[in-house]
Length: 267
Image (cartoon, rainbow, N blue to C red; front, side):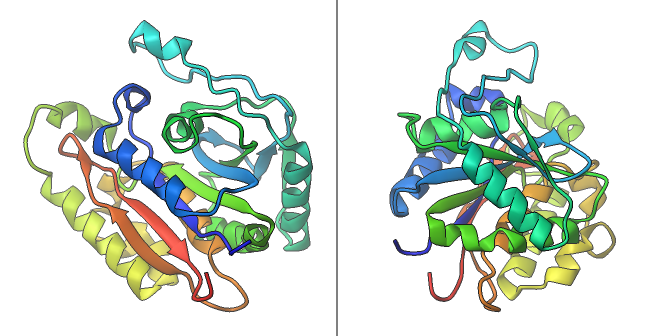
């Protein structure tokens, strides 16, 4: 099997499960553009833990981790199987890299996972394992988590980071009816793109100090951290990941919906 790329998706609100618009079209196109994976490893912003934790259930339940949305959202089902064996192998790779990890047997699919997968693999036949983020730890930690998991692509595992390129919900609520894009969000969006293309790992990992508007773009870090795992996971045999932006869009005026594909030079 040709080595799979890794992906980063901005998953949007739960409403994207019903009407994902252009972003959903991009997610579906991305799935069609790669070899059919044996397993999807989804790094979800909606699972926060102290150490990297993998979902170990063979039949993960649904989690509706939101409130105040239309009833139809709470009836959506995505019954992909889990893959406990992969969860254990991934945890072992992290341990070998000196990164403490765990496997959580009861974790279900949160909307950071099932919203994009409904568009990418709607038949729900491909097994899915989730990986948590650690907001108390650094972006560099998450980049190293990705590096430790990089070899899984050779086994047919598609690693997907599901978060958001910008995620200031207060600004989003205030600007939902505005046209155009908020200047600070665009500035941060373009700065991130420049760091990814130039492979400036240190600068991007220190975005809170080095970027324009980084603290406003991400008042809390959890939705940005999946990007670092996906980026690191595309590093292979000392070769730097090549970043390709495949979607440049916004939800409202404040939430950048960018999607990226990360490849090694040999993929």
